[in-house]
Image (tube, rainbow, N blue to C red; front, top):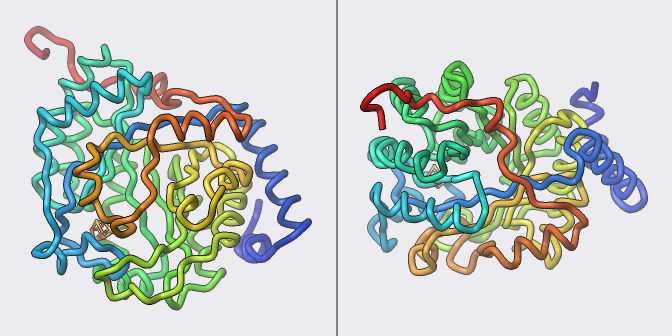
Length: 337
Ligand code: SF4
């Protein structure tokens, strides 16, 4: 079992040692998952957010200057139809943290499950909510939820997000208790963050017992207090992916689009370092320009690029790995549909 010291050491390796680390991670992925890359279809449902994260252009302070959008249940069902028609069975909705998304998504989920004849994973990333809201979403048929802690260091977390780490952890625990498959993760390159912080994030995620974990390099975005901060280190991010794979071979670990923005071929290298998830963006183009998660010129993964990428790294696209384990909670009794 890798402890925090081992993880710190592994985060520092470069050159031949880094190649060896990636080879071990790819071997661990192969042993657990074979060649499979889980493909998700994401739709961004709103760029409104009540939180004021220092690094994010969708922060509350920008809500008056951004061109805001919020989709409704009908638009979510249409987006899910496009995901289905592309042969993908992980329907992923993400958006800023506002209370209205509970009802909007909750109303759409049963219709989407029906669209897929129940053979679908509904994955959400909608921020902190009350336990009752999570339960409602679960009862409506949501399977999985991503809630990144960004940093598990309480001070750094609060400095970056103006929210307490405890409130995030309460939500993560509620999600786990309610039977969601849960993902969390960190940003690499936050000001004041050391490799030890990152190592502790990875160990913390393991101890939480989550099912998915991700790491993204910080990308400085305009109109944020961190616009002039240096970007997160690509090599450190890739090493973190490899270490995460060794720490918990069963995790779903994405090769995120921010890696492609950091460097040409960055997302390919994420897979070489042991990632096994790729997210394809289904947000309509005119809306996705307003979803400013990495600033206006963010890299948006579309279907053709994604299929080519998976092929180029010698892996094969796969559907949800959670469907068989998580039968729908939507009741099929008389009148339920
Ligand atoms: S990172 Fe998420 S929670 Fe923070 S401001 Fe951006 S959308 Fe809101």
